[in-house]
Image (tube, rainbow, N blue to C red; front, side):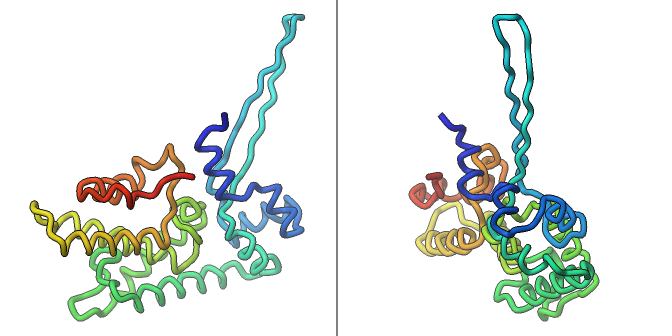
Length: 228
């Protein structure tokens, strides 16, 4: 029987060899795009080992490594395959992050005290936060925790999590109908952009630590995302 984690990764991600065939690039080109930070590093690396032995009392070991990327990587490769200006790509990426942030209806929840009481953004604090987001993106982290691994999803996930944490901090001990409806709305916002996470990661992920527990607490187990 196939391991549930391997199944999750194979169902939701593309292995490097498959990406090379789809995009018609070489393995060296894929590696170069990663090094130039024009696409992120693989989100998952699956290493497997096969040990062979025989009645001659001999042994042989085969080690295999597969790298998996989010499916959205195909469009990003098509966009950047001829790009000779990685710094421009980074600059545009951060600009889109900032635009998604400043235009969001719930922007006050993002990145701590980035906004003042009048909704005005502190560009120095914001740039520090967005630089960290760029780093996470390049490391393949957003290929793990978001569905599309793009600028919109990154901001939406940040705000969704912070709204859930705010809900946890301010919820009443007696559960009200208004709180249940609010939690359902937060659940929808979170699920629109956030992945399931691999089963082995689920418990310690933002989904497992916060949302899954909240849904259980409010007797909304039927809303908890299940694996196929």
